[in-house]
Image (cartoon, rainbow, N blue to C red):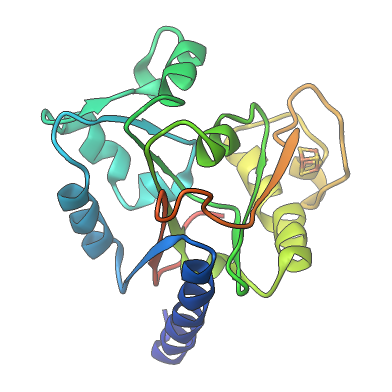
Length: 210
Ligand code: SF4
């Protein structure tokens, strides 16, 4: 990333963190994903059960690889489970849940769109601690911009990643479909962390996820 863009995005993240904290979110900022992963390794207590939401960001920062190979944690591994639905249900009562967010607004809110809704459900209630890892490319001005970001980037790109048969994989933008394979069934604004500091938003100043 260009150093001037990096500086701008750092300033945006810092401004965003003030608003997020006013909305009872815990926040962290790291210049790179390797420092963010080191933070997670120290922050999650041994013997914790850990669930994850579907996220390209978690793969890119090597969090999934770490969880698969970390003997001190009980990883609820949806990717190698015979019954993924059951693992997703179990993840709703995990000690810790890791996810990304489709967008974070400058006024300190999270915006997410889900197909099955497991990620939004865990973000809202269940796991004792939720870490939301986001590249600074996901910072947007407000909820309207977050909706646009999802319709023009996040959802079409995720549909392509998941090889879904949906209109956006052909057109590159949301066509408000109701196809069986849609990943857009539940829309959620997380305005605040209802329990103070239950949700921790971790900014990583890199281009991550969609
Ligand atoms: S609603 Fe359908 S067309 Fe729109 S982004 Fe979601 S899956 Fe794609």
